[in-house]
Image (cartoon, rainbow, N blue to C red; front, side, top):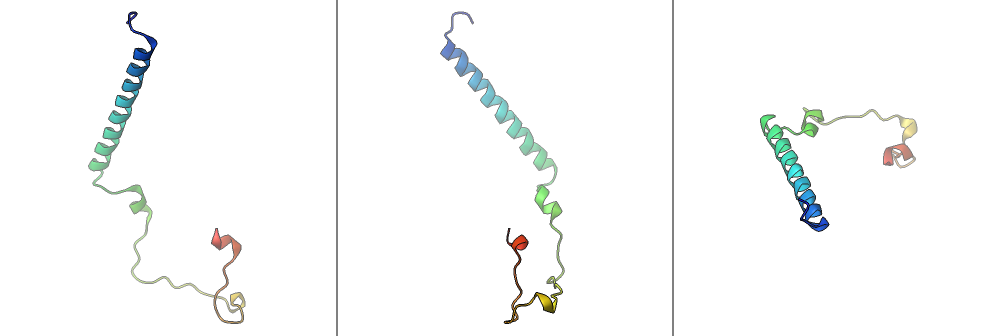
Length: 75
């Protein structure tokens, strides 16, 4: 490899890195297929049987009857 220039060496390293990333992606895809196609997010979301009803305290309602939104709930 002594006869090759630095650009060829850089290209070879870049190509090897690309191939490694491609192999990692293919391994992740294969792993997801073996799990049955269930994403991690779907496992965390609970299924609801109906609407969720929240208790509202009368003190939290402004004069027009609509619930207030606190600063911590908006962010």
